[in-house]
Image 1 (cartoon, rainbow over the protein chains, first blue to last red):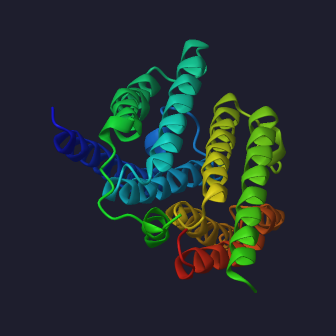
Image 2 (cartoon, rainbow over the protein chains, first blue to last red; image 1 turned 180 degrees about the vertical axis):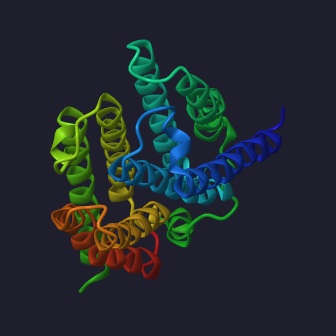
Image 3 (cartoon, each protein chain N blue to C red; image 1 turned 30 degrees about the vertical axis):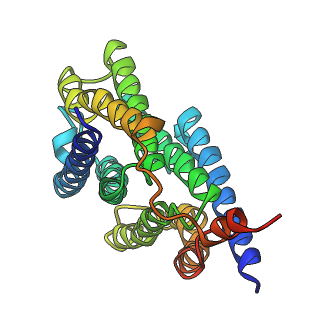
Length: 150
Length: 132
């Protein structure tokens, strides 16, 4: 796969993550009951779930910026990757401990686990030096230094 | 104020935000009961609060990256600003509806309100100064 094709894929993956993040955030914010999975609904619990939705949706905006230039904004993707990795382990731990409804595993797969490999690939693609776009214009001061007579 | 001083101040603000978020995130993750405000401590609620703590901490990592180069990573500052702007409105609404105790607003004062102006200023500096 050529460099430009890889970059296009990276942009597409991060853009899909952005749309997914905003969409998931909006849905959970509008219907926090979706995440209860049989747990008793209290106003406080619903508000806290809405707060999580806000954090998830907001990071969708960060992914949108990253999708425009994944090489420049690879840190944004790294933070998302860390978030998805930690959340995946977090929910797996509590699911295994029997403290979460089994449906949380499905939720975890869609929200976190399926994103770990694509995000890692995007990070690899955007950080690998061989994929850096060549510098076509040198800063003026560097040109001046190079042209300066000894 | 000199451009360099502005950028240094912006970096310090974002570094403080990063430290604050990492600290607050760790506190909530380790001791989620701190946010219960009299609500019954069910296993599920504590897990959800721990999840909040983890996400708050992850935002701390984002702010740390933003502190290394606010001009480049201004979208991270923008995302933080939007969250900090919307949070207090939500709390005020639920306090008005009687679903949250008024004391909950203190959480927003320290987590959101005091950061609004500094974040707005960092974005202004990041977008109006020349990138090195």
